[in-house]
Picture: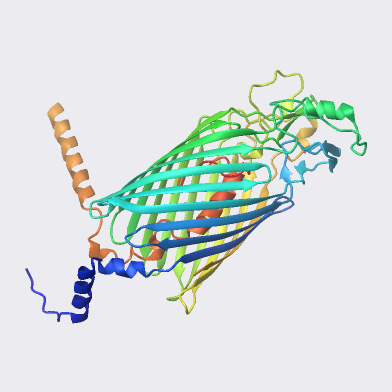
Length: 433
Length: 74
């Protein structure tokens, strides 16, 4: 054994002795003086000709000592703009009655039908408490509440994390349960019912339309339960390399439809004859396999993750996400971001229905359930200010390219754009103090 | 022949276990791993905002965190 000849730090020894007398550790004494930490962000998300969203977040964290940590988050977002209804473009202009039954809107020839009454404000609150409950064992519990005009969600979660192998390995188990309730204006439409059209929206007491509309309604509201289980393994590989593996199982039970989505029923020439509401299965079981690795380099950090997900709607997806932090100086960095996503179509996805065919049990023309690839390219610039606060800016481009999963297109639909790309810009300012 | 295969598998398993045991670092070697930007959830807000975008625009959610619920956007 080699003996140390370093001089003894008298003040450190005294501090340790004082802390020992007071019954606290030096680390604890330091932690007890820790103040609230705030993380704030303002994000803009804008699609060309479609949805625009602005989202503000304030997150606060405090360590009450001994790793007893509280974190809370307030999120407010506002959405406006237009969303694809699922109906197909036509060679002539189309008129649709709004989902609420109040008024009509027109879509020009050759254009993808978008419902421009899409606007909402959402408020979300999160609270989480984490603390050690035994040697090398941490527990965490949290609540989430989210409310918007026609949607209410309440969720709770709990997890355990166990450190072993000198904290080089962490095993975790998490559970989450969410109850979501939707109450769309006009009520919940009946599955695959023909959408009522009001030929005279100016006429106030059109009883014929009202009777038609009401005959397509099931109830005022509906709900779904989501239960998630997650198993995690985090492993330090060496001084620079860290890895995480997660397996997630998620089961959804209840109303999974989007009440604002339709399918066009077309004839042999591809001309729309009517519209029907979509219908998705009322259960869904998803499995996800997630791997993330972080590598510390001399000039920054590389962060790469891959996710494979599969479910009983037959949607398989692959996601690669990568960030490369490059330190420009001790206090500034830039971070390019690249994400690639690919999904297969749900087995009940179909871009339209053919007149005269037997109604399927389930059908949806929501492009988000269809075959698709998407990529994100972004750049972040961050700087630490003189007072230790951090200011950062992020600008990203996101593009979705839906694909035809092998559907024949009759007549005029061959000349229509049935799978339009969606392009969006994401801009964000964050401030940490 | 069978015992040979068993021996090969046993030695492979031992090598695997040995390499597992050598994974990780000593507490005093955590200088780089202890940096804020090396935390798996560094940039927590960015990740949460991204999750919300992709949750409402794509059919898959979760993986890094829980998958379900919370918003009428999907």
